Length: 255
Image: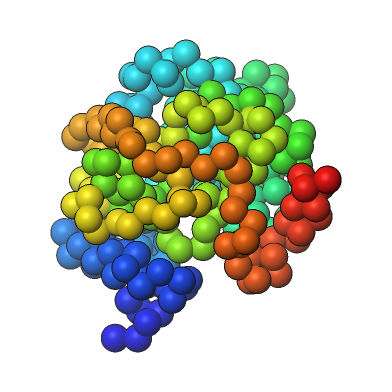
């Protein structure tokens, strides 16, 4: 099996995480828990609506006014629930591949425009109907929802290997949009919860505070350190190449 087959599109940056991603993607496929493509993706899963409903019942979610959520299909029920619950929602343009990398969705504005909230739950809909904004035009976030491939009950996580979630969270903290205690949350299938030793966390990795599956809610009470910003020294050359605004933002934050 090739390195790409084992770890996905971004294989090679961390061989241990490549292996756990491979195992989770394979387990999702083998168990029938996957919905749509798994490999090189934040995988969609059976029961994602139930996981979103469990998340929506938690006190920190109910108190939140502003939610950031990743753009993947697995979290479409989370994005829809945020809007249905009257929260302003920010979601990134997939792969941050635009000079205006985030989409702002306000449920009141959408309703006033006659747009049904379920029309903007997927990427096609939120890109069509939302407002594109820069990181600097956002506002303090009450909850940050991230996409994951594998997670641990201790708060360890890995995405698909591109580094987008850690980069975003670092930028949010440098801009003051996220605090150290801002809940970082994911929804996943139970198959994606692995033993703690399977996910090695390093200094720039952002841990999870909460994990929600269709069957349970896990408060990690993580003891992993919370990064205070972007570890620019570990940002990959291809990230600077693929994310058009990144170098300018780095220089702006450094200045």
